[in-house]
Image (cartoon, rainbow, N blue to C red; front, side):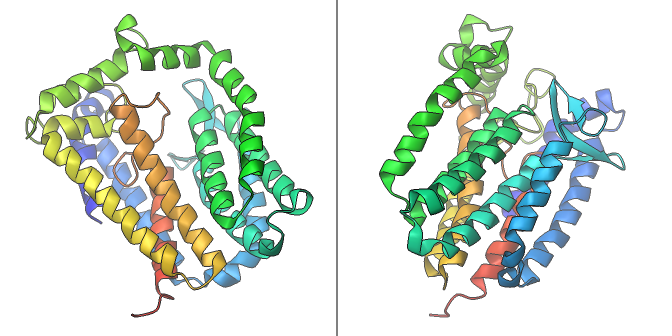
Length: 351
């Protein structure tokens, strides 16, 4: 709730001037965010109240439905394209990304799958190969949008579940080694991806081109110092830092609230992951443990990647900061994840 409240304030702070210039309404993004937040609150309540154990018998159908959406979004005039990517459906003026819901669906599916096959986790033909096949198909559909960052996220969360469930390390390492050539080709085949990699190592080589965004992010953090320049006083959001209310909102937090404000955000995410891991460790069943771990791992991983990208510690991935960045689909999925975690926590022993 604290992270969500901070998100409301920072989205308005980071987007008001841009929204006033482009949309003639300084609260344009704030209003839409509040709509998504309201829907997310309803979904979180439903996720916390539903009997998720009964829902698990539909895990295959849920994943299959989302995969159909992933195919449909790639079809011209069905899926909405923007910035060279086809990732969205437009409904009543609002857009949503099926790839965000794929993250939730694949965690739920694999929690059920691994629980059903827990006696055969070392069986390459019966368990390992089918699981890797599903991961490959799902990641491939995301990659075709194209969205390499989300494709890698889906694979990483799945591999986390495989490792914790008890897959042999040799199987996982072999799968990673086999995937590396394809990943390397995907990263280097497109010129804009090659430029992103080069910008990660030396953004000052092209300060007005591909290195512009990360340099502006550095300037935001440097300007913020210890205490920040003050809420609403950011200079980088004045059309210097692209995506300042979405992917790089942490940079604006660092500028306006300083090291202390940015550090507080990190501390809140650490507290969230710690509380989530308490639920994981005390969950009464293997299925609920895996489900909770996937949810906590997803949110924790996205927070680490987003903050790492903003600080220049990781190449640009295009992942939002959970609960804080503007982005309707991601917010809905994150709030549903919290609802399911609350649901699982109801089963924990009282001691």
